[in-house]
Image 1 (tube, rainbow, N blue to C red):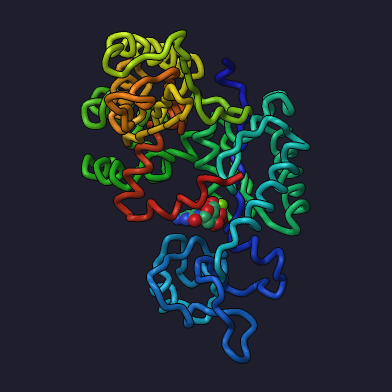
Image 2 (image 1 turned 60 degrees about the vertical axis):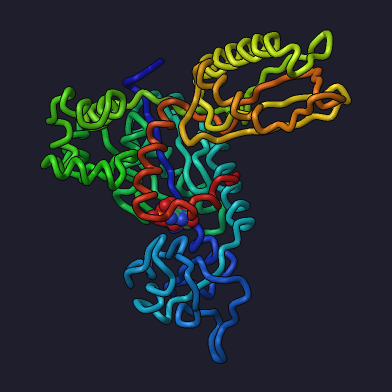
Length: 402
Ligand code: DCP
Ligand code: MG
């Protein structure tokens, strides 16, 4: 694994949903536009588009364009509150199919020039530019400008912001430094100058809760975080999160840009030579379950994944199959944890004392909602921060992003 000498870009679309509306409605250009209203809201007489003033309800904005942000509007703001701030701003309902179409278009345009792309959701990607640029920042800047132009061309005029550095974490921070339509570069020798003065919350993975705790320790900037003894961070935040914070503050991030599309699930199953009765063959079934959990755990380890959901599959003697799964809220990877989850799933299957549904011919365990250990740590931190902001459900819409 090449750790230094890499060049990784993070590309994030500007005001994505709002600018997507501008693409198909050029008359919106220059006007403050928010996305998040109700379908079917009609413009008032004499107006071309519905406005915030017309909105009543308890929704929140998914985003706002930069004209609307100048009026104080932003993602996750309650729409009624936004309406007070900017009653004349335009409010449009979200149209995910359209945003997904544009998402595919900008990603294809990038892949045509630089194929090493990791999809991070509807409006952002990481791109490993090491090969294309020979690890040279000057070449990377040229290529990033070409990528930005290609994105704009492919989307009918949308802009994006790009961060360039030698790892994902730093590039993610720096793509945000000059939004909209920005290009920010952090060469390794400039990491301390550019990144250290920023607030700790700028690190993707340090959510409001962690930030609050750090602030209470007198740690406000990334420089101050970098100056904390590693042992103290481990003590306060736990072994792995503490170490992760320490490394992040020093610009260390070993995660690679993952090109392949993730397997959605991994499963192991066994069909028995002879049908097994759920009570009489209980011991055999337990052995099989142990074996399956063990194999699945090894599969996950080999692919460096943890699972959020564990499910079981049972096929009865009459070939009828049933599945049950559970999502524990924690991620699992060890054979023991998988076994425990699988047992909980089996409890949900309505076995009978006799007849076809007392005897099974196949037993399987499936791990799904897979995630890398590094991302699991980040997600946990992000989840906590979102919980504290009460925004969790907003992100559900992004889960099936292209
Ligand atoms: N989104 C959402 N709920 C949120 C935040 C965002 O539904 N709380 C949606 C709308 C955004 C899209 O996801 O357009 C991308 O999110 P970003 O955080 O990248 O925000 P924008 O692209 O809108 O703006 P920016 O220019 O800051 O990237
Ligand atoms: Mg964006």
